[in-house]
Length: 97
Image (tube, rainbow, N blue to C red; front, side):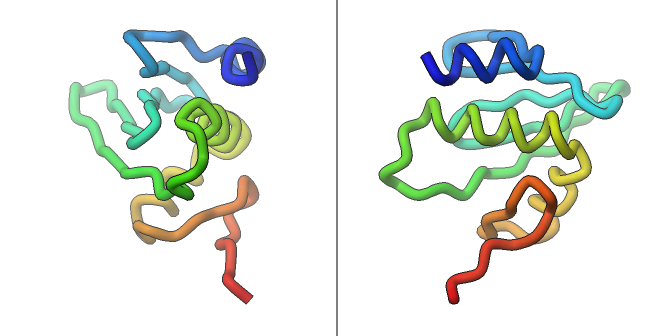
């Protein structure tokens, strides 16, 4: 139910199974519970594995990624440059302090 609300809020479209298509900031993304893909207009794509807590349900992983990318599409670039790090929606890194 939570994922359905986030999909409606962000304007994402369900493509197949738990894969969603999102347009944000002039960019096009495909997201599922393990990866976010940036799809370019010339047919090329870039993929990034989404780091998560292993106990987080996959629907929450997808919903969080949709919300973050809708709010800040440039966040994908940070994800790609710093794999394995968790980021807040504003682009700052979560720290283990």
